[in-house]
Image 1: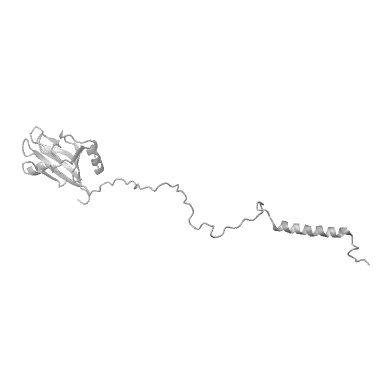
Image 2 (image 1 turned 90 degrees about the vertical axis):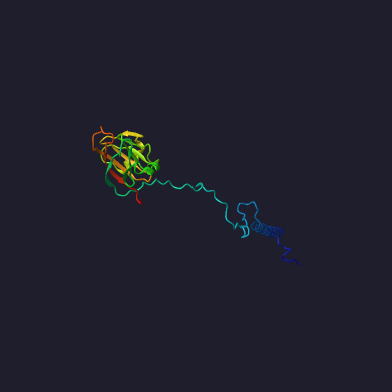
Length: 217
């Protein structure tokens, strides 16, 4: 008597074997992926591998900070309201002079105030020859010509630099000058008249002075 297994055709067994082999190959294909495959997954960096400190410093493009202080325009001195004075310059005798100190203001002569003359505290000298002189005045006093008409303190300050008075200048009626003392007082001097003809050796001179004193003086 024959069994059913021995009666099955031989190719049935071969077919089943190929089926098993195919399944095994498919499973291996799914599990094993080559490391150079573009789809292969790479391990994520662990916490220890990640940088924890600050990154590299980014070079600055703004350049070094400037240490130069901003320029400051020079300040213009401030002055008190001007004061007008009528002054009389009369040399005491031939060969002597009268001196003008615009800071006071006051007029004095060499006979009475020899020490002050020698100390050169005056700002302008009026000689018995009818001249203005700056030869023996204060070292830092400045005197200059100004045009006729109204003059401001700023114009006076400019003219003593641009049109300085010489050491000896003949005084004429209508002549205008500006005087700036060493203490910063500014005086606008207008020659108004002589009290006697110029034929005399010591003509007395009358002047009108507008005086600006620095604030705080």
